[in-house]
Image 1 (cartoon, protein in one colour):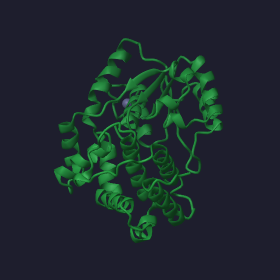
Image 2 (tube, helix red, strand yellow; image 1 turned 90 degrees about the horizontal axis):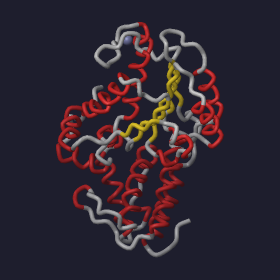
Image 3 (cartoon, helix red, strand yellow; image 1 turned 45 degrees about the vertical axis):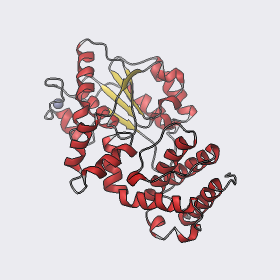
Length: 323
Ligand SMILES: [Zn+2]
């Protein structure tokens, strides 16, 4: 999948490589769904390729073929294990050990840490040691949408690469091509709700269902106006908990900013947000929705968690406290 708005960043990286100024530790940052992982993978292929052509991996050499099959012996991706909420120290230690070995195919080894902010403190400390003594032929690429959560000692040792969302017309054209079943107006709404990040907008449209998201918002607004929680929730919500939690988290983030009077969000179909929300209570709800999302694959009772969440939402709107 080609992401046209990454071209500028790729050209910048290629110039840095030509000038031999590419740091051995890179930190790719930017909002969720802007294409950070795609850029990181492009760079990993580019650095591992045995015969890069015009600043791109050739796609044909042994290294490129192995990358295509996700079995390259010199490429070490790390992320949050499926059953965990953070990157454990063992994963970083294993990565560090592999990075100092002699490359198996070309001359470089690449470590890639996705969601680097999820490293626990021990993992971050272990990584720091590797960053302090970089091997000549080893490159570390960190990807993070919340770099502020990384220790300053790690950030200061990385060369930053910031990805910005594309201009609206470019994002709309790309979305129109990849979400052909949606109207232009829906594409624009999804972009507004995704911080203009096209991949996040596509996920909202294709996987999370913008219409369902609006139903969730309407249920929240109805409860805020005094309708009982039980009248607004149905089984569909916990049939795919990941989707529902994602929407609850997204609306919570909008409502937190609204409670702090930070900005007036562009809501779908001109919905009006409730006034006088308690920012702390709202922040607590946002946190809970994110936890719910992280637990969505586990066997907890999502129906109970969601009803509890909605009762707290009701309390936040009626002067009660949420805890
Ligand atoms: Zn190649």
